[in-house]
Length: 234
Image 1 (cartoon, rainbow, N blue to C red):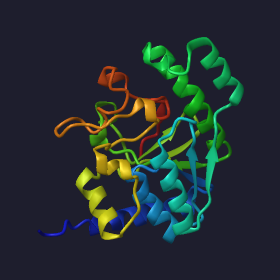
Image 2 (cartoon, one colour):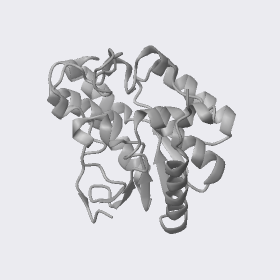
Image 3 (tube, helix red, strand yellow):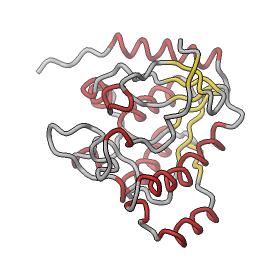
């Protein structure tokens, strides 16, 4: 089988990361430890160490995600700053709605996501000039207008999506060609991995994000991290 040639796209990634490191510091990678973010983790850890990384520990992550978090630390020797949700806010939410109240309505699910993800993200981005994500256009209908660079009005900094034009096959080609560690749930048909109670495996032919909040309509399947206002698209 012929190996997929991703050299041009990897070169474009290097060019973009060099630009970010030169013109947009301090910058951070929002690292969910999914397949796409592991492409960026490998590149940044090996070539652009001035770009920091953080992850959001919601308190409901699968064990496989914690295992990968440790593997990244051990293999690359990088410090991924971990942000946690406010304990009092979690206690109040659970007291009012139960530990799995997010299944009851989109409103309660988004409230849970706000507490566990959006508010910690705001703390993680405070004082930064740019943030980097691993989002791709083909992941979901909510991301089909994604651009490589835009100004995030909500968080008041530049947002970069370096892999937005990459295919799933190209992502996995990079991981295999560079022997990059990845979340073992991917081998069990979890193309998109979030909190354990809100993520399930998918069947062949399903949308890659169909395993996230599977009880909701596709149009509502975002947690709030990536739906803020954007402007000055470049």
